[in-house]
Amino acid sequence: AGKKTRSEMKEWIEHNLELVHMNHAMHKRPDEISGGMKQRVGIARALAMEPQVLLMDEPFGALDALTRAHLQDSLMEIQNTLGNTVIMITHDVDEAVLLSDRIVMMTNGPSATIGDILTVDLAKPRDRMQLANDPHYHHLRSVVLEFLYKKHLRPAAA
Image (cartoon, rainbow, N blue to C red; front, side):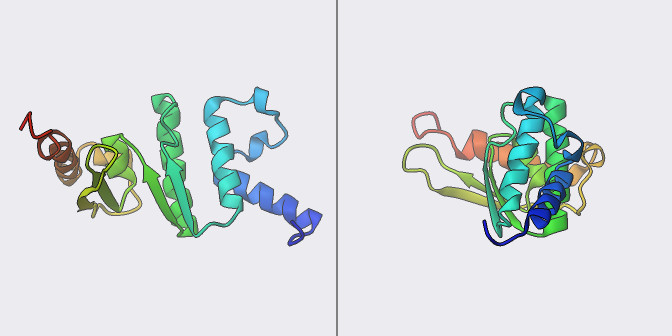
């Protein structure tokens, strides 16, 4: 407030909606857009604050697979364009490997701690269809799954 003129604010809104591919729906009301579109608007609103760090907690969890994939692709494009840091909490192993430079795997419980950190050294930009057959992608995915299923067992079950 008070930092931009009315026309600068309009341009800024349009810019952020364009980043999430929502400029076509700028004049729609909330009840006229889908859940995926609402998620995109939420991301645009967060980006409008020009954050150096964007924290996202399960941002795509309630979406269907196709909408989720589109938003993941948009997020990779936005992060590549803006160069800001995105910290995302997710329980989806494929999403973590696709979107991350580093995966911080946590232990269970109220007193959770960092269990392991995996560097994701896949080339960027990332294409999900190319990664489907990439042996290194599958190796990284296996490392995360191994942590979840083997290293993460309760002492009684180990």
